[in-house]
Amino acid sequence: MVRDGDVVALEGFTHLIPFAAGHEIIRQGRRNLSLIRMTPDLIYDQLIGAGCASKLTFSWGGNPGVGSLHRLRDAVEQGWPQPLLVEEHAHAGMAAAYAAGAAHLPFGILRGYLGTDLPKYNSNIKFIDCPFTGERLAAVPAIRPDVTVVHAQKADRRGNVLMWGVVGIQKEAVLAARRSIVTVEEIVDRLDAPPNAVVLPSWVVGAVAEVRGGAFPSYAQGYYPRNNAFYKQWDSISRERESFQSWIERHVLGTSDFDGFKQSLLEAATHA
Amino acid sequence: MPENGYTADEMMTVAAARMIRNGAVCFVGIGLPSAAANLARLTHAPDTILIYESGTIGTKPSVLPLSIGDGELAETADAVVSLPEIFAYWLQGGRIDLGFLGAAQIDRFANINTTVIGDYYKPSTRLPGAGGAPEIAASSKEVLITLRHNKRAFVNKLDFVTSGGHMEGGDSREKMRLPGKGPTAVITDLGILTPDPVTRELTLTSVHPGISVQKAVEATAWPLKVAPQLHTTEPPTETELAVLRDLYARTARAHAGDA
Image (cartoon, rainbow over the protein chains, first blue to last red):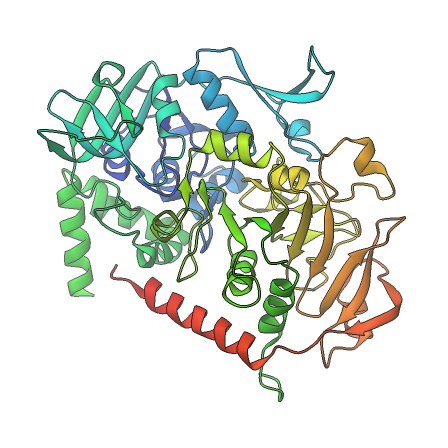
């Protein structure tokens, strides 16, 4: 469902990051993707380093609590493995842009981007005057991905999806997209979702696939914790082009699915 | 470690924590601000409301989160809301008393840079970028900033203003209609700087014990103004140090993990 040249959003704010789906995009050798994600995180560091992306729209590009995303930096600073066009926002702007996308509105509006240089470098940040009060407000075009991919805790057999915990921007990102894919920890007979839970009804979801542990090394609340140690290890894996390439070849390109990926990590750890 | 038994970083974190009034609603950045805010919550400010931009409101983590959205934050929160909600209803809606930020670079008017060093299109160092900071800096009623004090951080001119402080000084922030009153203190490992009431230029108003004024001046790339009535920061109490060290020890154990 992801094609070369697509505008793609893989969302999940620290929590429920769809790593398994990201790896499959790398295995399929997709190229020239315009990637959108508030926090690129390790998943886009991997996609960028693997040469899948020609553009990145984002609002915070670090390895949380650890430091830089070295593959993202190498692409921006040195153009490796290919130049990366960057559209840079603040979180509040991207949140408003996704919410506008979900509502099929042309733009999002916020009391934001005041006192920052971001609008000087991003022509997609503009200012308008409120027609009622005259207050100057920021406007950003709606985000409308060709494909959004998210990970969630559960789906039922009809394809209704349930998520909880830090739900971030996943719901808006799915509703904003033309096509959507949801990977889940488990498919169950009954969701038993409380009335105000975050549920994506099956008819707004393009496809559901069960991938247990599919958010590793991020986490799935109620299933497994964030693997902070892996986030720290990524700093050295990704620091040099060679170490990154041998990692991605061995563990992602050299495996056929996410179970294979995790098995190969385990083997590497036991032989270390 | 100095003779008196605490490090410069511990002094900085303790001094920053003391700035938090009990009961204040704080929007907290990751790293040093998060450590200081949780130290405050575990010592003199138990009723402080901590909010992280992952949408966790009233969170009470037992260990410091590595990321802004660790599961611990959601599990111990009063409420967890979506990102459009946390930024629009809670932050831009004017419900935050105190925004608490770190920074890579700061200038004399407490504007901060977390985006690039060098030219934007050909940066010498690409930093993570804005995240929630521009709106935290603009919309919180008051802002605290904490970072280590050296010439690479305390620069004469920022290459990029990520988040606005007192802009060009004087009343320029008000003229640009940023809603909150901006940074009220910058807490470093050497001392505390506060904006001059009129010019808004950061002025050294307190030095930590054993730190000379000269050291702070030399660690600042602009000619640092020093308050006529300079204070010396109270050293960390035994309780403050014990609670902070326990917090870091618990955090280190929790993050060692099983990769």
